[in-house]
Length: 147
Ligand code: RTP
Ligand code: MG
Image (cartoon, rainbow, N blue to C red; front, top):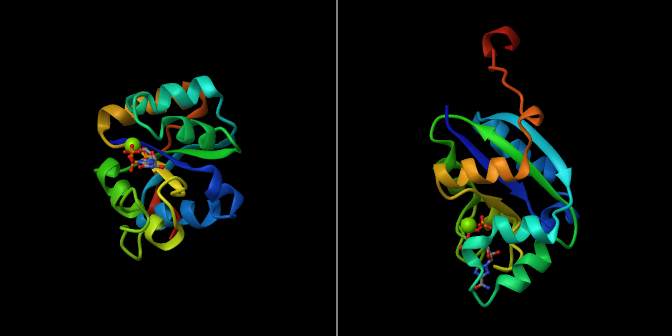
């Protein structure tokens, strides 16, 4: 089953949006396999956003993501990588459709509330960067038992 890495960025944590964002993924039907509130070191931020090292916004991005805690998650489900990106909306909240997380809560591209892996390969890399194996659970949802 496919897994992705999603994180509520510092602006989302500061604005009390963790619960709302987790709820959107839960209600959609994805399974939360691991989650934690954590501070990101500069070293981790530079690895995570390594693909943007040469971009003009890199320093601002690293400064922002290390400025205050983030809420990191691993979600599992069918095609969850691309679906999670759809639920998040376009990178620039000014272009993100209403109903998406960035469309509903974001204002500026530099503080766009949430991160989600952009491919299955990125997801594997990012999950390994942020989580130790022992921090991830391996249960299956047994919906028929609970509803
Ligand atoms: P993310 O990695 O955070 O999930 O965002 P993304 O895939 O939608 O966008 P990406 O191209 O990977 O950019 C990473 C983050 O850099 C910031 N950014 N600022 N000032 C700018 O022009 C600019 N462009 C990108 C955004 O915060 C974006 O989420
Ligand atoms: Mg990205």
